[in-house]
Length: 535
Image 1 (cartoon, rainbow, N blue to C red):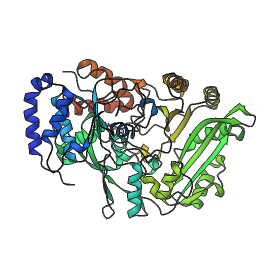
Image 2 (image 1 turned 90 degrees about the vertical axis):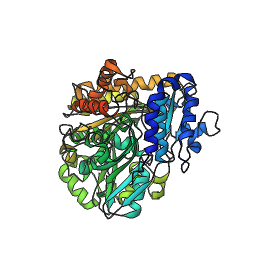
Image 3 (image 1 turned 90 degrees about the horizontal axis):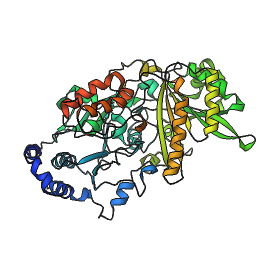
Image 4 (image 1 turned 45 degrees about the vertical axis):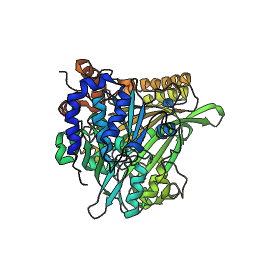
């Protein structure tokens, strides 16, 4: 992809540095910000149509269309004073330059799925740079690569690959409405991670607008910055415009299954066994385990735990059954449980579309479910004793609402160095845990109630998960583990270290050094961004 010359913008940024001190204080910053955008917009790509203020009739719909957590769509939630729905790379460059002139907080949104609303909520006056219009996907089957802009969704990526090839796919998440920008830059995993690793392990180039308004590719940005935005989160370092990905090979036929077992159907024994085999099975096989509470045989007054084993196998059902009968016979998988389909059809199965849904459903940007939610994460390095499982299951029955999901490791995940990308959770982990609670009741009281339930389950799991640090997954954003309230200085670094070590472990300090080098004044910041070194 060609990098356009924007020497006029670079000159503009130089002039702006000189003028910041008096311009920002002399006038209303938001008003001057808009004037800055309009005055310096390229005639060939005017920015006016991309600007939405609260006075614009479409402002609310633009804001709300990519809010994926209803906790942050209330009348009391602080709203941005402006939304810029960038239509061209130059619009991104202008936002970066002009926001610095007027000392304004910028939030970057590319899909809105971040669990804590960090890309579209702030405690201080802010504007949103929304990337959803920058969503081109250029697939090149000959080189087995694709350039994907940050505003594209995973569903669009899957559809465009399948449109060109029956034997190619990409290892990324199972929710099709997730935006590429946040997903790829934070790591990104899915049901092919045991075979092909994370999304970020298959990224080979990128385009980013840096703090100086320059549009840089991998060669121009250098390997340190490229490393940082392939797992350390793009929003701490600049605005990622696009990623170049390597496609992976998939068979024409894959097999999926979903097998539920309650406690009365021996779920405890099967879950116990899953712990010992899930990371050691054939790399073509991924078995996610989800646990939730359902009504037992006695009706609503008799709750029980249901363990659902959801499988993705890169091959036909005959070979799958052979693998399962040898490695995990306790599940009792039968031919009737297996569904053979194309890889693109499997992406629909995994996000619970009805069987037979056309692949075009992947192009929809409207989530199947929109609700209030809280998520947390953990990593497990040793199997949980059977007594521990029984205790956790009893606690889940008492709490009722929170769900547990275990995503198995092994395969490729154990082969890649912990320092190869900022994502550090590699060899030594058996599985990743997601805690998930959804609710439909409006209001802060309901939110506090269900968030508290989630925190309790997380607390109960303490003896069984990683320690020193208790690790967490950056893309499962969780503000419980730390918030950075400071723009700069020692306090910012110390606050950032609290959550940074949990997300990035030994890679945190390298991320801080990259951040300090490329954005020393910490313009690109949010509640859990990478801090700079103390001055």
